[in-house]
Each structure stands twice: as structure tokens, then as C-alpha cells.
Length: 213
Image 1 (spheres, one colour):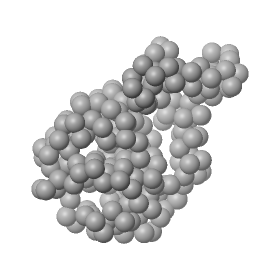
Image 2: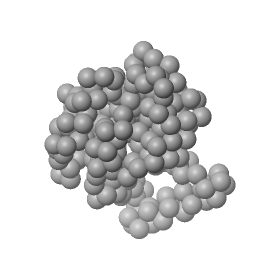
Image 3: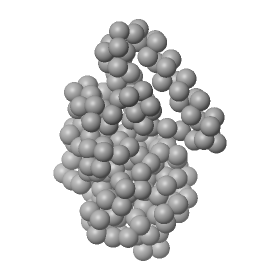
Image 4: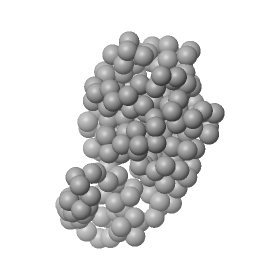
């Protein structure tokens, strides 16, 4: 865990979901790969061909953007796959209940945080897929607000997405703390617009973070 900044007046905590609220490298990888496999099938390519196209594009994009990373949704747009199609695919293909389950320690931390702060999930998955993930880990009644890919038709990092999160929570950026497992995708922009930020390696870090906050 790396704490970049905790707001002096904290009102809202923005959580990334995948790789943040649960720890499952298998499901994090599967979410990406199942979409690439489907894209490959649609185009009549082998799965390896599809994986190589995405990997090559991401590597080139990173080289041209000072080592930053690009989300799969944004990478797909460069191949003519619009956000609406990504939303449809993710709702159809993602099956979190097959890979992840409740972590009672994380559930208790979130319950405690909810007593003091507004909790909201901001994710690059559409809201239905995101809700199914929250349900699979048993926190859908704790984190009830979701900003998803279908909320703004934007993939993180996006200032529009963060603005909607602030509007939903009824607070300013300076009163928000963003928590995620990818600096470029989840934290760089929040820090730029005045939010706090914490980088985690998985759900276990949330347990420690609960003690800090």
C-alpha cells in the first residue's frame, strides 16, 4: 500500500473494484482475456492473435505516453470497438461469481467506513457487471452507488467520470479519497484534480487502510 494523500476534510471514498475490493489475479486477468477472446472470435482470429494485437498496441501506446497504461476499453476504441459495444460485451461475458467470494474482514472495514463516509464505486465495467461483482463479494448493500462505463460512456481515467462521482456524493474533489490498484488508471487524475489517493495491492491492504483512516 502507498498513501499519496489523505484529504484533511474527508467526506467521500471512491473505490475502484477489480483488484481493489477483492484479490483475485485470476479473475482480473479473465475479465480482460474473455473480452479479447470474444473480439478474436468475432473477427475470425485465433485467441493468440487477438492477445498479440492488444498487447502490441498497449506497449506502443505506453512508449508514446511516458510509460503510462491504457485501459482495455480505451484500447478497444482504437480498433473500432466503441464504448457501447464494450458495455454489451462486459455485461454478457463477465462472471464474477465463478471466481470471487466474500472476505469478511473487508466487509467489516467497509461497514465501519460507511458510518463516517459516503462510499462510491467507480469502475471501467458497466454498472450491471459492477453490481454483480459487488454482490459476489457481499458488499452490494454497503457500496450502493456505482459510476460505471455506461454512466458517462467514458473509461477511466476521465475527469467527467470523477466529476459525476463528486456530484453523486455531493462534495468537492478536495473532499474525496480515491483508492485503486493501478496508479495511471485510478489515481493519477484524481491527484491532479485535488483528490486524495491510495494505491493498494489488493483487498488485504483495505484492512490496513481502515486503521489509518
